[in-house]
Image (cartoon, rainbow, N blue to C red; front, side, top):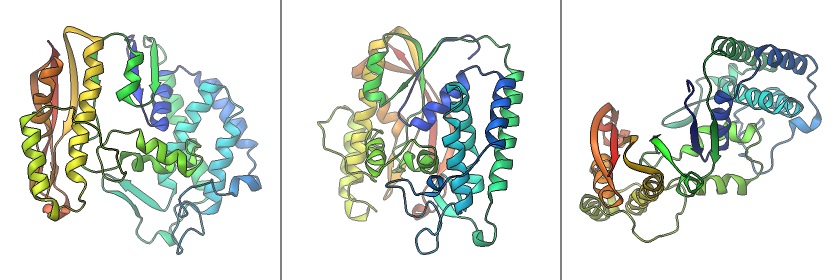
Length: 348
């Protein structure tokens, strides 16, 4: 951060650890020595092969209907490394946990992208092994050590990571010079699913209730959860018209709860901005990366709706730039018709 102090808010515990790992100075020599001792003395126990309570049944072989994410030796080796890392210094343990997370998907039977998770082609004949996992982790540790050495002389700052829901966690922040964030888009994609493997394999989730509780703390940007109805908070004529169009098209929507979800989404964003308004002085700025969505031909102009909704909260749009064009879903032809924007709001 080049000497700039920061406060981050992150509800996903894996990403919160990733942020802290990037911001915490670690001696590369001591870290590499600790890692070498750990790997050299690594022993897989019977407990490392056991499934995690409440985890998806397809996480480890034999899986479900002969489909599984990890072979037993990859799964148990990863769990043994995680268990052994608990004996390291806290900053070292966190960094190793993140590096282990970075090599899980490449050593699994699946690939993950913006459309979700799918099995690799002919994965049954291309399974990874314990040796593959350790070799990948060796490489990740080498890259991390190189970066730690290269950037060790850069000025540092004071950094705090608030682990929780931004709608409430920002209450712990008293002031800021600038606020920068990119919230989930209202595209009905459960962002918790992107890191589902890391969350389970690295010990962030230890039961099905843990998983459900984390998903319920995310912004209401998808319909994979049943959300509680709350009073309308966002005030926008464009939002009202958009919700009415979605309700009229409800029979054509792939999920009947989409109109309510879209309304909840903007309510949640306004709750975040209410906290931001408290901590920013007049003339300070908020920079937001945000994207549109579309359902049954109804375009959700997120940037315009948000701009309207924030006037009453004391924010004025000063700059708006297009970052990229995103594809519609395959149901709508997959054409590049949705915009992703960078918005700059000034606290009035």
